[in-house]
Amino acid sequence: MKKNTKINLLLLLVVAALAVLPLALGLGDHKEEPFTGADGEAETAITELEPDYEPWFTPLYEPPSGEIESALFSLQAALGAGVLAYYFGLHRGRRQGEQRALEREREGVAGSAAGKTHHEQD
Amino acid sequence: MHIAEGFLPPAHAVAWGVASAPFVVHGVRSLTREVREHPESTLLLGASGAFTFVLSALKLPSVTGSCSHPTGTGLGAILFRPPIMAVLGTITLLFQALLLAHGGLTTLGANVFSMAVVGPWAGYALYRLLRRFDVPLMVAVFFGAFVADLSTYCVTSVQLALAFPDPSSGFLGALGKFGSIFAVTQIPLAVSEGLLTVLVMRLLVQSSKGELTRLGVLLTKKRSGTETEAVAR
Image 1 (cartoon, rainbow over the protein chains, first blue to last red):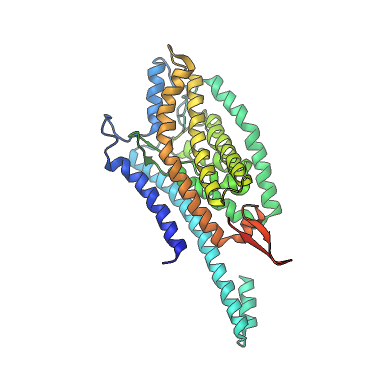
Image 2 (cartoon, helix red, strand yellow; image 1 turned 90 degrees about the vertical axis):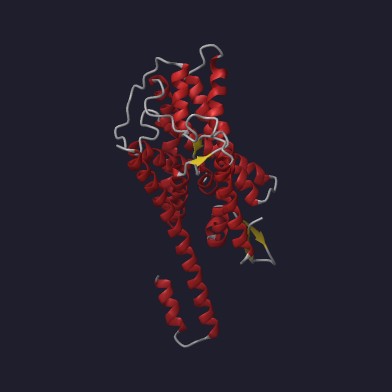
């Protein structure tokens, strides 16, 4: 494995560890409901600070269930991941194509010119 | 950091909206200029927006026993400067407000101000400062992304403390309360965001040297007269 790949995998591993450790160490055990969202906790804190506060506007659309909500969250992540993968895939392909065209040119194989123009049309 | 729909008093909601609007308008103009002058950067712009999409959908557990999510705004701010992130961040927040009931339209101004304005600017400022002192690129990227993430949640805490000061201990008491919910939870997540941003930047250095050089992320170093080479220090 190349050194670059190793470093990248190590970075991912540390991120995974940072996410798993709070769960593994049971850092949510002191709470009634462990690992709820901080946004929700802030709403609770607001109602504690100002018990009379009533939200004066409600969301125009609310996912009817937790399942639908998580589906939409996954959709958001999937869209982002898809675009990122497209970007890196495209650039990797381009680099490989350029490299191949260079090699062909160096070897001086007949028809290398045709191959190059074909690549450039891409 | 999403303040829920209707959870800011009208006066605060309007004030944050007014504060955010010029940044977003300026951002839209920067974005259209960037796309017009450098059409080839559209893909990387899309990738920066996509990074924010992924990271802000990623709810992670933290040491405080609650869950929160990174923002992903540091990367785009470092690549394209903060004004562009004002737009990309707003798009992400709109998506979540309209489809996920996460955040809201009345609190959009406040959420844009924390995630799409202060976060990117704070991260970018630190990144530039570190680079000026010749700190290695990846170290500067890590701290830039870390601060973009953490400062966003600090701003949210301030926004809520301003709107809901503690009856006895006032603004500071409420700031401590919201800060312990948001900012403390966010520290390990900001580390994660820094590491993920470094990962993506490493992949970009491999795949898009030319683009990063044009954007000034990679420096061109004179070598043997006319030949120049992009370097990642």
